[in-house]
Structure formats: C-alpha cells, structure tokens
Image (cartoon, one colour):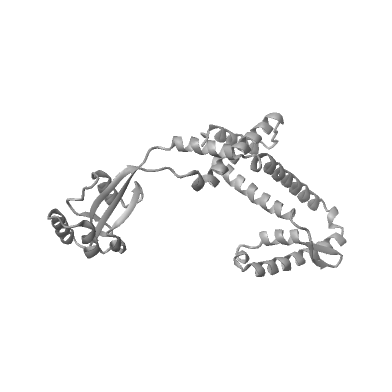
Length: 286
C-alpha cells in the first residue's frame, strides 16, 4: 500500500513542478486573435509534450509545444464562442481540476516546502542504524576455459608464482590488465558459485581447487575483507527526502480524515476503500 502512496507522491511532485512553471515570467510569446499565449503557458506546454517529442532538441521542443498551444487557443476560442463554458461537463471538469490544484498547492506548502534538512538527516540516521551489517570482499580472479588450465595455475601459485602476474598472463577476463582485480563486492553481486567460494575464504588465501561458473573456471584470491560502508547522505539524500515527504503526506491525510467524516454511498466502493485503508494501516512504516 505504501508503494501506492509513493506513486501518488511522485505524481503530486510532478504536478507541483508544472505549477511552479506557471509562476514564471508571463511575457506574451504569441497572439491568436484576441487570445494570447504567455511564456508560462508555453513552458507548461513543453512540460506536457508527448514523450516522443520530449526527446527533441530544446528549440524544436519549444516550436512543437507552441504549435500545440496555438491549436488549443484556436479551438478554445471557438468553444467559448459557442458557449461551451456553460456546459455541465465542462463545469464538472473545471471543478475537479480546481480541487486538484488546491490539493497540490497545499501539498507543496505543507509537505514539499515543510521538509527540513535536519529532518532528512535524522531520517537518514534512522535508516542507516536499521540496516543490517554487510561484509564485503575484495578479490582477484583468473578466468580460464578448462579445469586443467585452472589446476595448472594453482600449482604455479603453490610454487610461489605471483597471482597478479599470472592473471595478466593467463586470464581471459577483460580485467586481466588489472591483475584480475574485481574490487570490493557484497553478497548478491557475483554468480552464486563464485560468491560462495570468495566469502568462505580467509583474507590472503587463494582457492585450492578450480571454481566452475557459467563463464568458465576461476582461481580466486581474497585480498581483503571488511564491513561494507553504508551509503552517504549525499548519495541517498533525494530518496530519504522522499521518505520524509511521504510520512508528512500520510500524516496530513490521516489528520484530515479524522477531522472530516468520509461517507461512501456505494457499498462495494465503501468496502474496497475500507480494505485499502486497513491494509495501509497494517503496513510497517519504512
């Protein structure tokens, strides 16, 4: 259920972004009869371009958006001339849009703009503290096609041959020029057979038997083991801010529901709404 709210939150943020563009410099960029197209309207048209057109260069996007905006003004003028502003369907749609935009303004004021850096930092520290400790390994490997080749490499290592030099000479992996260095990795990053062997070995040890994977036969050397460092606030700040915004939004919604009675007349819709809210309440906060 929280996934739904994340999507809703993302949609609200996008709408607020469009709304901010309307507040930009409102210079007139085109005239269509007695109607005008302002810079803010053009910016809004650019932001609402079809995804295929959004890949165009900036100037071409503006021209495409302006063309669409002119079409809108032309037919909007005709619609006004026919009195369609008094059409009940138009009135219903405008009422819904007005409610949605008021929702977005309230959301921006009490959620987006209300989030502080201190709140983001506090939530980051809470999330990091809850993360399970992860071990990571730094390993090198020599990849060959046959088991016999791998066994021969192990014999050479037993005789004192340097692992890095052997990797440069024998390995078929593209990183052979770096001596087979794979850097640090945590569990889940490598194929299972390779990972199981690497994490079972001690620091400084190399595999005494070839490790077979879908890529061939590996000889592995573990250079180091350590506790994996968590991501920094700078790396995950935007995601953490989204969590804080989500919590603020849910808190505001729950408070509003408590203050105003929500009554759903249709029985099936009422049950569905209650089930959704029950599932949301049972979800652990993340």
